[in-house]
Amino acid sequence: MVWVVALIVLVGGWGSVAVGEDSSSLSILVVRMRVIVLRGSPGRAPIVGGDDAGAREVIRHQIEVANQVMSQCYIQVESSDEVDIVIADPPGPCLLSVGEKYGLPSSGGEVRLMIDGGKLGPWNIAGDLTPEQTARVLFRYIENAGFRPELTVGIRGPADAFARADLLVRGGEGTPAEIRRWPHESLTTDSMQSIDIGIVRLDDGLESYGVNEINMGTLEERTLIRALSSKEPGTVEIFIVNRFEGSHKQGESFIASPAGTLGDTAILDWRALGRARTAYTFAHELGHLLLGDLSHPDSRGDRRTWLLMHSRASSAVGGPRRITEEQCVRMRARLEEMGSMF
Ligand SMILES: [Zn+2]
View 1 (spheres, rainbow, N blue to C red):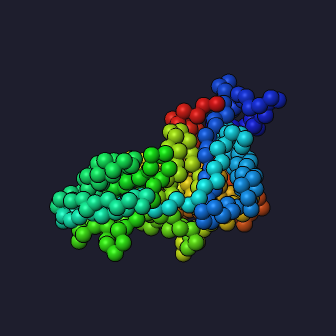
View 2: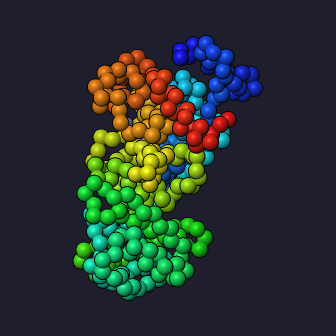
């Protein structure tokens, strides 16, 4: 099928447009989006835009550019007035990760921690428990102490014994609680199964995933996403950070799949936003999410650097913007699945 009809903007809003040689009509599909712009540190200015209003303006511009690119697939991010743009502090120490070290089982021990300043424990953890089983034991202890834990079982990394498990802890109001160690004590006396506290510290950049965490994210990334995600199904979430730690990366995506637990989420750094019309990184990461695919055409030998999904920015005038027809079909199918019919 050749899509020969240009995108038609009807007076008064988007409408149905006829496509191709057949008489079927194709509606604009709308991406529901939420964007979370981080502050450099709690209470400070957002990473882009200078202040909250400026940050919102930057994001609206990014959405406008992404929409220009996505038009070829008859896909649009919902109107920039409707996109939920949140300016947020980097989350404090609010997440417990069990088995962060290789997903190892427990050998037995005691857990001691402080939540919102109150000492809790020691809690006994039996031996031979998977990270998930240990997290379930901790879940009950934390709940009985009056807090609201949220359990997420991650995926088993290629080098892990078992899947790691996360407990995000919230206080009565629903805001993330503060988890600390007891002074001069370790979190766990278990010599085998690790328990770590997740916190987001952007002064050294966000720790980005390596091959073992490609679908699960690093502890810092999971803390960021689990603490600030709205978890609304059918909504794509984009986080804006200052930079990725020790990395040339400018964007990362987590796709919804049985193997992933942070689905439909992308993280971009401010350089990515600065390259709006040269690398189209915002649209590129959105492309990963809508395709449900983290790979790039160049990894299969495709040299068409003007393609949006090519991993290296094209020097061609106007940058990489083309989306193949096959990719458009896949993106639209995914959006239909997400129930985003306009
Ligand atoms: Zn990419």
